Amino acid sequence: MKDQIQFSDSLIIQFAKACVAILISAFIVSIFSSLGIPLYIINIVLIVSILIAAAIFSGNAIVPYTHNVGLIFSIEALSAFGLFGIVGAVFAFGHDGFAIMIGIAAGIVFSLLLVAPRLSEISISSLPDFFVVRYGSSTLRILTLSVTALVCVLFVAAQLVACGLIAVQIFNFDPLVGIFFGAVFIFILALPLRITVLSKAQLFMALLVFLGGLVVCTLLLAGTTNIIVPHFAYGGLISDAHAAETLLGLNSQSAYPNGNSGYLGTLALISCLAVGTAVMPHMLRRVFAQGSGAISVNVLRTGLIFFVVLATALPALGVLARVEFLALFSHAKNTLPLDAIPPSMLVGAEICGDALDTVASACAAKGYNNSIPISALSVAPESMLLVLPTLVAASDWLLALLSLAGLSVAILAGVAAVHSFALSLTSHTLPGEAPQITGIVIVTVTSIAGVVAATSNVGLIHLAAWAYSLIGATLVGPLVLGLWWQRTNAYGALSGFVVGFGLTAIYIFYSHWGLDLQAGSGDEARWLGLSSLMAGAFGIVFSVITTVLVSFVGPKPKPSQLAFLQPNKDLSTTVPEVLE
Image (tube, rainbow, N blue to C red; front, side, top):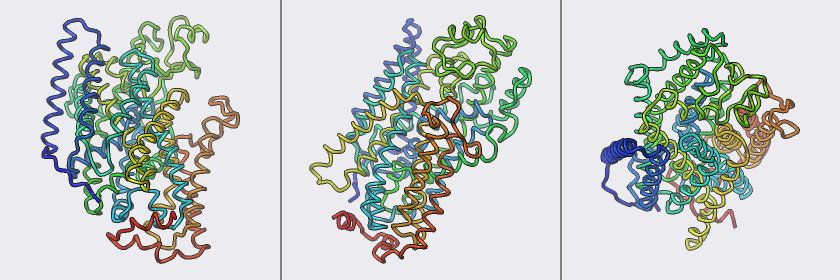
């Protein structure tokens, strides 16, 4: 039964509150800076104050208006992977970096057209329950929960890695500090929530990301290009980047689309992200919560608009970061003295393919005398959004706002993922036991994700891309074909499920670590030149093929398994009957 909880604030009022909060934060930073208080202390005060306020109001519900849900949906779809990944990918790969933004947007459209209208009409509360109703199989439900748990850990780990990056680059803390506090705030914000209730905390944090991201884009680009609309700054900056690369004698990363990964690689990444976004469990949670196909479509449509407005402003920051990065070496004639390199740029960087212990020792080991040639230095793409304010000498307030937006998007996406998984796991427990089990699940999953983030030495782009590939390849056949093709049976769904997941998981290990499970050792293999970021491309294709072939060979589904095709039919009692 849907919650009918009323809250009078409209989105316009919430926008006004967020704008006032941003202005107050600017005033506080200005006052503290004039008193000589270090920037990291100012950031800590601001972030802790806002997150504590969010935690206090996290139990206060708001009515799920379409625009409220749509805004939160868009920020959950963006996540730290989109915010840091779009900027980093455009910085590293030029036009090809648009694949992340296009992939996520295409996934929302995919869900809007093929998943949400049909799935939202079913009176069930979670994705695993769909497989019980559609195929009459408790085995598929257990397998779905298992894969969802793995994907949730990878996705939340990516958000926590982003928190660690902010701790290092903004506060000069150990990344473990950022990972720890990110996990703590995910605990605090996730525990009070329910599936059909939005909280003031979620809406405020989503507005902080949306408005803060646009403000950061506008001010950073206006100060260097004199263009006040960030969406229009990309073209001129691309030309500047191409000119700088030509001056330094580099192969252009920016002049031509598909010049780096090729058409196949770009298409594969877009496909993996699109399918993964469309079937990602915490994204589908918003669909289940609406109880109406029309409302779900409106939520996704509104979310797509918010996502496009923010995401299309980010690529210009990636190109600006590349222009400023190349300018450092242009002024130094291709070789940059060590003391001229911003320390934040060296977080996760490599020299000649080797990770840095200290930059001085790394340079000495490679025979460089207190300087680095541009051809030897590789910086971590996901760190460039946080490095950019330093490169352009931005104000302390802008750096503080960027760190607030980065932490908010990471925590908001992490909360959505762990809470969605906990609800799926406890959808058929006794009402009195559900809150306790939900709390245990949230703490356990977030803790495991924290361990992965702290010990895996894998960047947030890889962790998130693997999550999208795994969930997309696993569920595209059983879910999408199950929604639209009546001939899909339990045998076909199970076969497609196993083939999609197995092939994708094997390719991730094979292409990233190799047979010796050691990244960079030289025994890694890539089919058709595709990296582990596109691992789901093979799984998606073979999952669909396997599901179709086995369904044709196997028996036709029972009429009771096709009852979901009847709009608004209450199937809530079907799940426990099958499980029994």
